[in-house]
Length: 114
Image 1 (tube, helix red, strand yellow):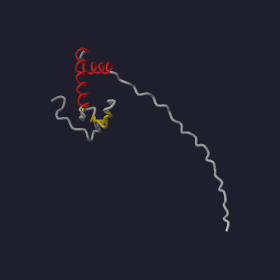
Image 2: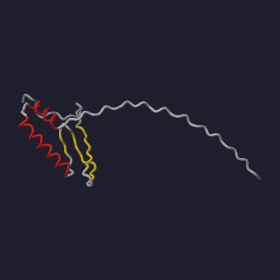
Image 3: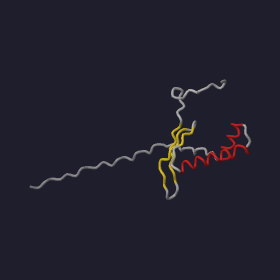
């Protein structure tokens, strides 16, 4: 017995229009001199006093990251080493920002006036 084969018509899919994507703006980059200026402005100290303190803080943070330690830095949050590539020295970090909700924020031990 011979079987009859039929060819199915294949419908060509119409090209889908690509969704419009808004170009993202490049994030603002803060460099060390800008950070020093921000600290000087916030503390009222001069640059000669602030710069060594900031440098020492950054060296200490870098040493802890290199050691693979977690850092808890209020009000920044928790900084963890997620992945380390020893071949090229790349370290992937995860920052969990500190929760600043009024409900979960810890109450201060003393008021400013005390």
